[in-house]
Amino acid sequence: MNHAEITKIVDNNIKARRSIRAFLPTEVKKQDILDIMNVAGRAPSGTNTQPWQVHIVQGAAKQAITDEILSIFNDPEVLKEHTEEYNYYPSKWVDPYLARRRKVGFDLYGLLGIGKEDKDRMKAQGARNYQFFDAPVGVFFTIDRVMQQGSWFDYGMFVQNVMLAAKARGLDTCPQAAFTQFHRVIAKHLNLNPEQQLICGMSLGYADQSKVENTLTTDREKAESFTHFYN
Image 1 (tube, rainbow, N blue to C red):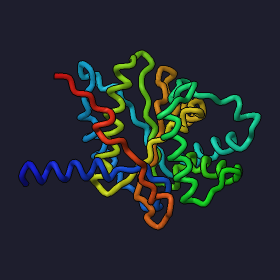
Image 2 (image 1 turned 60 degrees about the vertical axis):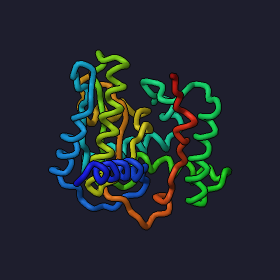
Image 3 (image 1 turned 120 degrees about the vertical axis):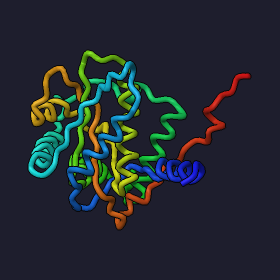
């Protein structure tokens, strides 16, 4: 295989990755998960610190997390007691970020036939996050609290590698910051060391291509709009 062929395969794999929101129940082999993590572990990290810890939940362990989170999610008073440990999103939205956020929401709800006033169906779709969109594998990523911003930057490259390595094996993913609101629930179920902080969750499995939500392809800006050259 020559360089041009390798480039095409890598580029196509990156461009093919999407957030999948409906999965088949098809089992994912443990060895495939380990192979994905071994490849992802080649991500660069400052002074080779490799700050990632990965927690895989399946079967009854996954269902127990889903059940407890949904019981909280559906109780407005209890839900108030659960907040994120860190701000993933800005406290004040401005454009162009606000416009992009709104568009992806409108596009997804449009595919699903959910109207702007249909609050119950919006909430039900939000709850799908905590069911891992029916994926057979849930993944949680944690980091030692002693690590600083640079390690979080490194972690992003690791998570991207996980998604690309999965895609190369015919698997799909959905990275989910939605789980961070329930970090205490997840820490309890995983028996996490208090020094471990939840970064995000992820659904992993085989996409259900029959579901309309999986036809969503989000827009991307052209490189010319965000790349600046200095000569």
